[in-house]
Amino acid sequence: MMRGDMHCKNEFAMCKKYCTTIILFATTLLSCNKINPGGFWESYNKNFIIENISDNGLWGGHRTIFWKRSESNIFNVKETLSFANRNGWRLVDSTEFDAIQTSRWVIYDNKPVFPLTNFGFTDSVIQSKQLDHFPRRFDGPVVIYKFKTGFVIIDPETNESIEDNGFLMINKSRTSMAVYHLWGE
Image (cartoon, rainbow, N blue to C red):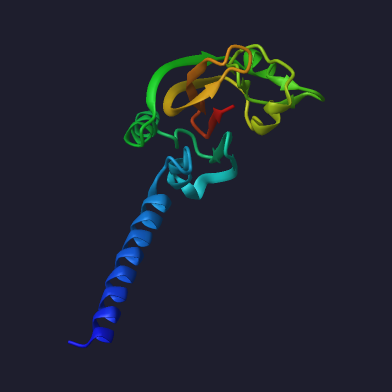
């Protein structure tokens, strides 16, 4: 074998190795929910999604997705919770809120919001620009399911992490559903 042929063979092998590495890295990157936190929700009943708000940065991000149908009992709670669990969201708790409670979740010019900030979820709304990321499209009565998502919120005052940062809200007639997710600083 000539010296030039050996050199070409080595270059080809090296190129093949790098190309394989790049393809594997790209596949992992594109298929990983850790790159797109809560992104799996975009595939859930996607024909019923009416709004999808998401922003992902180096230090954190937020996601809000709304689903709506006119027929009652469209959103099956057991099926929805199972979907969340299969995708790594671990149910922590659930709480019912009536229409009077949810009607208080407003900011500024009576803009309805879901009360989630870097301090976590709270039933009493604090005035925060962060709430602009979490518009609320329906009122109570609702049930809110709280999840550990594998990501955390960093409390800006204590620098402690809050692990319960994913929320699913479903109205009583099960015609409307929303996911709220906040992570990072």
